[in-house]
Length: 387
Image (cartoon, rainbow, N blue to C red; front, side, top):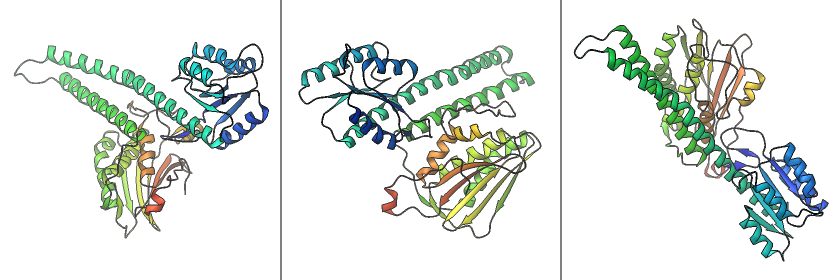
C-alpha cells in the first residue's frame, strides 16, 4: 500500500515522476497535484529535453504525451525507453487526445502501462499514477526478496552442510562427542535458527505488504508480555555479560491487543539492545501508563545512533553504521516489521539518543482499540520521534 510517494514498510525517498508534454499549463497542473501527493516531479516539453533528463536521473514513472513537437514524437520516445527499461521497471502512462485510439493501441502494444485521454480529471491521473507506482513498489519488493533470499540463505546453508559433513567424518558411532564436535553442533543449531529468522521475517514483511496480517485482539496483561520478552532474552544477555533491568509503574491497566505480535516487537527491541551493547553493560526495560496509552522503553548503554541512522532505522533492508558487538547477524527487517506491527495497533514507535550514552527505543500503544470510525483512518506512525 502506498500513500502518495511513500510506501508502507518505512519512509523511503519519494518516487520521481517525469511529465513530458508541450502544454505548459497541463505540465504545471499535473506537477502541482503530484507534488501534493509527495512525488518529486520533473518536467520536459519535448523528447530531446526528456531524453536529457532520463540520462541524468532515475525515474519511477513517466507521463508521456503522444504528440510532441520536433522530429521525435511520443511513440518514438516510448520505443527508446522500452529498449532500455521494461514496463515493470519504468511504468509509462500515455497522454493522448480523444481521437488517438489507433495510437493508444500502438502505444499499449509497444509497452505503455496505461493511458489517459485529454481532457482529463487530475484526480483520475493521480489515481492511475498511484496504481502504477504501487505495482512498481511490489516488483521492487519482490526483487529485493529474491536478492535477500539468495544472498542471506545461500551462505548459511553452505555453512550448515560443511559443519554437518565435518561432524559425520569425525564422530564415531556410539562414542562420546568431542568438544570440537559439540562446538560444531552448536554452530549448526545457531545457523539453523538464523535461517529460520530470515524466513520468518521475509514472510512477515510479505504479509504486511499484502495486507494479510490480521491482529488477534484480546484483553491482555502488557506487563506479562514484557516479562515474557525479557525471559526470552535472559540467556542471550547472560552470554554477553549484560544485565537486564525491569521496571514497572504501579497499576498498569490491561490492554486490548494482539499478545503474540506485541511480544514479537518487544523481543526484537530487547534483542537488538543486547546485540549492539558492549559486554558488562546494562539494558533497562521500563513500562508506564500514560493516560489511555502504555509506553514501554528499552534503554541500552551502546554507542547510540547517528542522525543518518535514525532516519533510515525503520526502513527495510537497511545496513546501519553500528555493528553488533558479538558478530551477530541481522536481516535488516526486524525494526521495519516492528514499525508496521505497532502501526496496526494504532500506536507509535521511535528512538532517541540518551544524554550520556546509548539509545532508547520506545513504543506507545493505546490500552483500548480505536472506535470503528477511527479504525478506518490510516494510523499515524512517527518513527524517530520521542514523546
